[in-house]
Image (cartoon, rainbow, N blue to C red; front, side):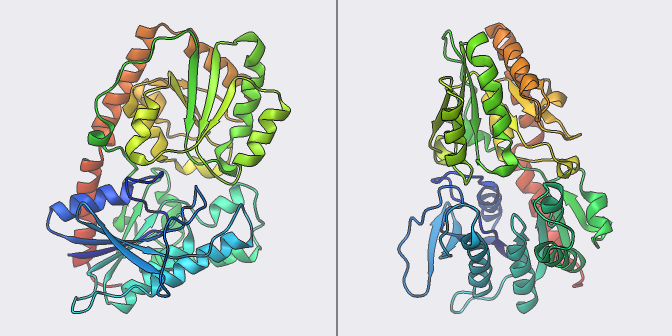
Length: 407
C-alpha cells in the first residue's frame, strides 16, 4: 500500500516530540508498504523553523525508509492569531501534497487531529485521490475547548470544529482513537461503532534501552518532561514545590520542555522564590531516555478538566514507565495506567497540598521500594504499549481501510 499520514506535529527522532507516526511508519515500511508523513517543519514546541525553504515551501527527507515531507507554515509565538494562521497554513500546504512524478496516488490517507484542519485536509486528500480515509482522533474537538472553559458552545470556532469532527467521523472508512473512553462520544457524533479502534500511544523499547538504576544521592528529583501549555496543570506543581521548599528541602522539581506557558511559569517560580525548581530545555527523542534516567521520579499532571473522562494517552507517561521510576500521577481520569500498573502514587491535580504529600510519600520510599515500582511500570509498558505491537495493530486497521467499501 501507499500510505500518507497527514499530521502537522509529527517529528523524526532527531527532534523533541512524540514519534508515534514515525515508529508506525517504520514498521509499515518493513512490511513492504510505502509511507509518506506530511508534517510542519516549524516546531510547535520549540517555536522555531530549522529549515530554509525554496519558493515551493516543501522539502523531503527519508529516515529509516520513511519519507518525511516537511512543509513550511506560518511562524508564531504564544497563543496569538499567528497560531491560527499556522494551523490554516499547514492545512493548505497539506492539501497541495501530490504524488511524485510517475507515481500513483495513495491507497490510504490518515488525517490526524491534534488540530482539526489537518484531519479535514486528510479527508479531502483521500476524496481527491479516491483513497480510503482513516481518521485518527488524538484530541476531541470542540469538546476540549468547551471542557477547558476556553470557549462557549456558540463560539464560531466551536461550531466550525464540531462540523469538521462530524464530517470526518461520518466519512471515515476507519477511526483510530487514542482515548480509551471516547468510543461512545465518537459514535454520538457520527462514527460507525464497528469501525472504531483504540490504539494508544506507546514507547519504542529499543530506543529506550534497558532500565538504568537510579543515581545514588541525598536529593529526590522529580522530573516533568513534555509540553508546557495551558492544559498541563503546572501552576499546581509550582505551588506544591512552594509548600515543600521549607519542610522537605531534599525534594527538587525539574521541568524539561517548551511551550507557550513556559515564560509565565518561569516568572511565577521567581515570584514564589522557588529555589527547588529548575527549568531545562527539551531534548531530541533519541536523548529523552538518557535525560529520564537522571531523575528519581516523574510527574504526570494535567489540569482538572471533564475532557479527560474520555481517557488520556500522553507519550511522556509511557516514556516514564519505560524508564523504571515511580510516577506521580495527577490527572482526573478513570483510565489510570499508573494505578493499574502499581507504578506510582495518584494525587489531585487541582490541589497543591495533595501533590506535595504524594511527592513526600515517594521521596520517603526506600531505593528498593522505588525500584520495585519502576519495575512494575516497565513490565506494564512492555505488555501493553510496545510500539512494535501497536504498529502491527495500526497496520491491520490501515489494511482494513484499504479494502473497505468507500463511504
